[in-house]
Image 1 (cartoon, rainbow, N blue to C red):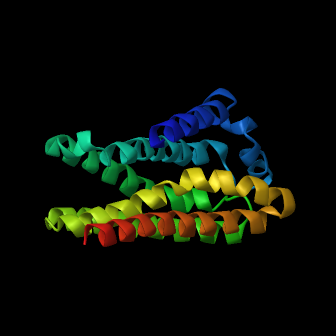
Image 2 (image 1 turned 60 degrees about the vertical axis):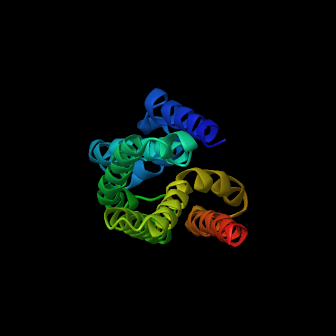
Image 3 (image 1 turned 45 degrees about the vertical axis):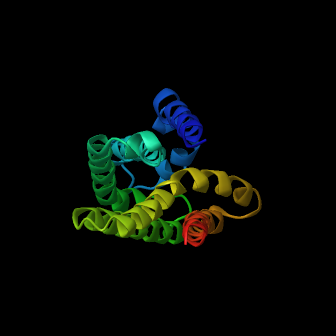
Length: 197
């Protein structure tokens, strides 16, 4: 299921931003009216952001498979790539968020999301280096949950945008995505812990 979602999301990103082009993408047209918005500079941040984010999305479901766990070297190498894509992405997000659809409230929401992304991933990587494997797994699962906000956000924001202004629908969609994804991961983790014990 995760692989299918990654493929669909990748196809969506490719069509919207590589075929149609950023200049013609619905979410970018509104930004063009801002005198401080420079498309070329924004693209220099945005394209690496979506490419690295898609790589992280593609890696996360595979890392949860038995194939990955049975190949420790592959698992570690993919984990390093995953961490690298996120740590670079975390540096890109602040600039991109300056021109968020919905204005300042959305910008703040994306910066909160970025903080969660950095925090959960950094804890997962740290616990991995410390060989604290159970804690490493828990934090990386939380990091995956935050990574998948980039998919769930786009699903949640569509119906909200029908009834609400972007300044309300976008931040709500971000916060809801963070909460729902983390609740899903934590409920699965707790259920597994209870079942094992």
